[in-house]
Length: 227
Image (cartoon, rainbow, N blue to C red; front, side, top):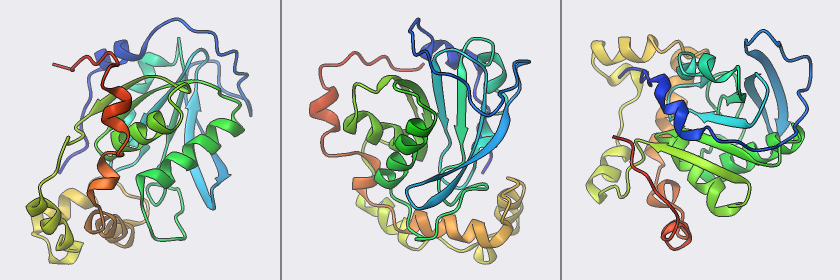
C-alpha cells in the first residue's frame, strides 16, 4: 500500500477559464503555499488546507489516506487556482463522531464547507473513494461541479470483493509488511485511526461507489478517459 504519486499533468484536465469571484478568507498566503484551517460542518470538525487564487479546485483523497497525498500535485495549481484539500471525515485531522463513513455524508460535509468559503462552483479531482464522493456531489448538485476527474473508481465491484471487504483484517492481524506500509502513511491517529478506516472499508456497499442516478444523469455528458 502506498500513497499514489499523481503527475502534475492531471491538473490540466481541470483547468479552464471561469469567473467565480470567490474572496480568499482568513489570510491566504499569496506566495503560493497552503494554510491549515478547520470548519464545523455537518456535525464534524473538518480539517482542510487551502491556498492560491482563481477558480476553485477540490482535491479529494481515498480511504485510509489523507489530504497530504496531494502534496506533489497542489503546488503547480496554486499560481492559477484556489486549491482546497480536505481531510475527509475520520481521516487525517478531521473528526467523525458517528463512526460511519458514507459518500453521501462526505458530499454534504464538502457542500457545507464550500458554502462557508462562499464558493459557488468548483472543479474536482478525486482518487478512489474520493472519486466516489465527487460523483455523489456531481449527481446532487450538477450545476455546482463544473468539471471532475475520477481516478481509480471501480465501475462495479463484485459480490466476492464486497464479501472480502467484510473480513478485512485489523492492523495487528496483517502481515508485518502491510503493518509497516500502513504506519508509513503517517496517519495522525496511528493504529487506532487505521483500524477505524478499516472499519469503513468493511462496511462499504455498492451504493457508496455509484449513486443510482449517476449513469442516467451523465450518460450524455462528455467523458474523456485518462490514459
